[in-house]
Length: 413
Image 1: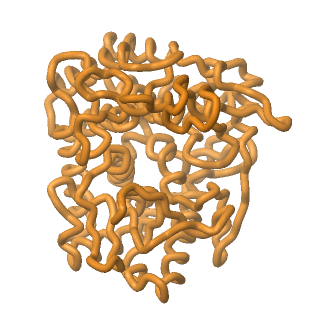
Image 2 (image 1 turned 120 degrees about the horizontal axis):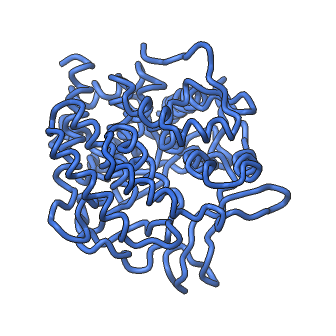
Image 3 (image 1 turned 90 degrees about the horizontal axis):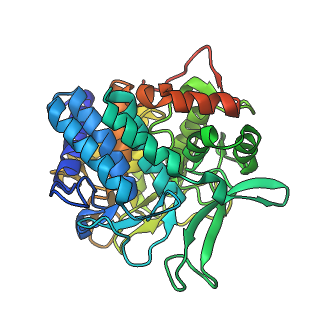
């Protein structure tokens, strides 16, 4: 099987996951997608955003008919009107049947943003008045200004909110949780918020987070603190970053390219400790032999954690930026490690250096969603085009001072 058939096959199997793990029962949880196959009754609001984008892919590729796609989209957007939220920010996890907040999880900015990216994608694709009306209702109700605060001369967003003592991520008094003060996966938040904030505030927020530069073996990267590969991909799964530089001249696609190559080189350099890194690379957050884990590579702001576990979805998500290197991993797994490929395509994670080689038995919605969108972008650029050209995103890019480049550099060779 050649690389293009591998990509097409992975895309179709990824789509199958969203079909199989989305709630199609009529009721308040219709359209909500499971966080993981391990606990299907718990929905992830972020995975639901990826699912909305999946229905666009399915319609474009005639895997589902237009009436089915529209039914799914309108039904999901209707559910999202009443799903648990606070000032428009969704609860991170929901009961998949009722749409209510799962236990005392936080109201999450990034997971809300991932969901809203899916909302914008379906609004860009379906010229349907109900889709437009329901979508705008969700976008309009988000109270971005509520999360804005000043710290040490910088304008920042809060990261999350939890009103419950002893709730998720609450240490001490309940309320706001942490802040987005570093370069990570949150860039989409500035695009989503800019049209709904005073322009001066929107620009200050985008310029408020740190741009920490670090270099590893010749690869200079604006790093996230832990060197986690996923942080270079979640905004870029929708936003065609190769087409723009920001007001400081940063091209985030180039940054993802350098981060991917650095991650691979770091793995190669760690072979004496983990021989499996000779075949595979990709240190990120994923399932692992002891459960969910967060791994990283240099360059980073502190010594990264890793234990031989490769996040396969992050290697696939890196395809637009490290095409040749990512395809090598795909082919190695497909031809030499058949346990790494199944009903929903590539498994979430692999560890060849565990006492018994580990192949993740579970599929995670946000992981499979991110790699699915990146593969579609490699093949057609359709998700990038729909999202980036939507009037609200174009308005945001103008407000924030992004400039379209004259020559788009892709890394698809």
